[in-house]
Length: 309
Image: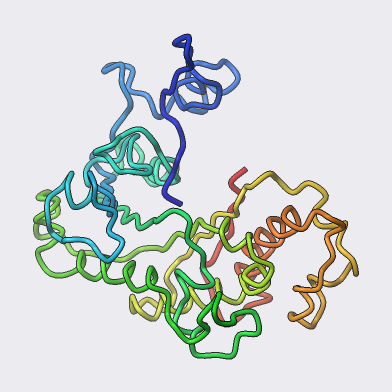
């Protein structure tokens, strides 16, 4: 998810639009919750010097085929203290925010902490991409997939954006690169501490991609752990909010077509004329299922699915 959250957009009359970040900051119903994002002394959005961010989008560069690293900040990518403005288009555009904002503010070390840790969020996000093809993990490309057929889906090709994501991460982890971009990291050891995944809309546009989502997400988690040489890497899956749970898929026929023992039966679910809504719910169910260690003991540990509202 690139992030298209509006920061302070106003209507034609100059009034803050409902739902923008600044509106939430002033609304009595949400003011306390969003106050942590505001620096009262500076009368501006707070920035976190201990939480840095790197995002492949900068100026006109979107890193579609990989990013020039270490490159030039603000041109080849966006990097700096975490604050608002690192959504779609990066800091050069500065109009939007994405999930990095809430995620990073919750990772910030508490005041007075004796730890000297520095936190870096590496954000790789391209809009309009699916897991079934664009981010297709190697394990999915090595096994028979009843839901991936040419020409719509190439079952034996690893996703282009999966490869680019790892290429950028590995470039950043090369000796001396991070200290070039962030001088404060000089002589500090780097530890890959976690992986976050927040995506799902485009897979929900296809019955087949939706049916394969749980398997592809489990494969993605395993393959990222293998690629980063972290077999127990903690993983957080943001459950897609979409338009909520609605009827929780109870309108499906037959009733057990999604949870039944035959996974191929998922493409035969009848959603009573609301196929698109059903697919969105099924993506959310797949995200929860892929994070269920009882259902997927092969993941061993440290996977959580978090509702995003």
